[in-house]
Length: 410
Image (tube, rainbow, N blue to C red):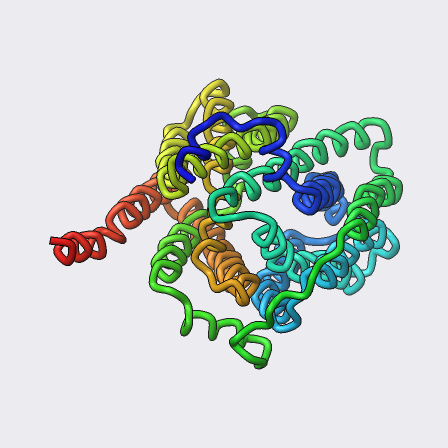
């Protein structure tokens, strides 16, 4: 096995790693993200245009993201109970796809809240089931590449979407109805692609049925390595605020909306290009090594933002930030699925992603408070400092176990 991993891969070997299911799921994510990211820079402008206050916008986004956060674990556990992935994936992408054109149908606040909740519920429905299906189509030796390829395609959509949004906003200024309708096209394409897939029923979950929050019971049966991993990841998530703060700092430094959006597109392009190569590297030298390198990059990026950088430094930081994301996001899911129980894989993913999303919400609230009270430099330095602490946590987390193993062998 070691000899096979160290030899250069042939074209046929790569095809086996990125099989039909992985390719289709990655294309689904590509088109779904194009639809979502087409509206990312437009929704706040649209909401202000139809009379939403900043408070109402905040409540809307907070509610929508919380819906996605808390539902990921529930639907992940349900997927494991059924031993099926595709029903959740299909319905999840359908909800998200249909919500795009519905956004412009009415301007009533309750309707907007309903549509945004439907969109985020779709994300909650599909996330754990989709990642479990990706895991089923990989081996422990190829998972970083599989998840890296998926993240690469997903993030490519995140680069294409804002670019299309800018183009449409120039060609059809303030024609929100048309833009929302056009954003629905790639969303519907993503739904149709899912129907190209089929699956075999998997063994059912060993956790049994329960209420909406019963996925938290997975912690009781989770392995010690899984618990150590998730503890470190959630500590990091608790201080890793939303990318909007990086964009706010970029706008503050550049004073130009176009440069700000350009920096965001650059980040996504770098992320998309680097995700698969770094996944391949993780499969070769170890997931943990690549992940830790990504954490150090993250700390460096936030330190750069803390120093009131120039425009050039900002763009360098976004390139490094794209490499950090490629070294951690897909690789994290590969790591989690390697440590989870096979029949509870979606529950394990759902548990983590639910908790991570909730932590991310509090991270953004905390970052906003620090920024307002102590300034942006303190916000970024504090986040960089926590990233370094988490780096040492992972570096030292399994040292006692190794020492015991060495003593036992002696």
